Image 1 (cartoon, rainbow, N blue to C red):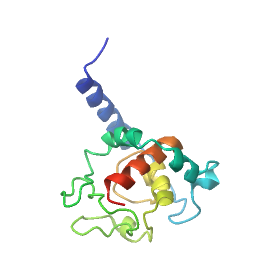
Image 2: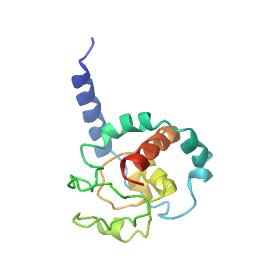
Image 3: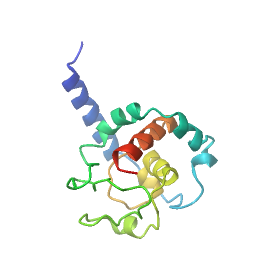
Image 4: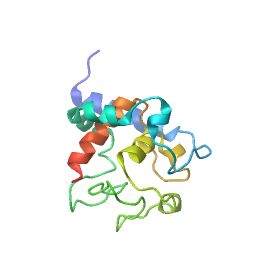
Length: 152
């Protein structure tokens, strides 16, 4: 049975939210340790070949909670404009978890890659209910798009 694009997007969104609710919140693997290169892939190479259009599509799962435009309001999550180079938990006007505020993380492509892989493991105790993106190429595409969309 074929679904309309709107129904398909709604089903995908519901699936992602349900998956996020079932995510584990395990012991830390560190907040500012080595970049993802230790995981067996070259993030720099993935970013160089990343398709920002694919990243824009991947951001559809993020936009319910995050805005990216300068001056846009926070949603369930903070506005991401200017995120690159900013210390985690410092965007004015958003109520961050203590875990995020005290993490000492500065948002770079490397830290965003680790965060997007599994937020609950990168900074345990944060409030983001998103299970993560497993595919490094997808994370790179999203990061490439975010660089453009957030004024980096």
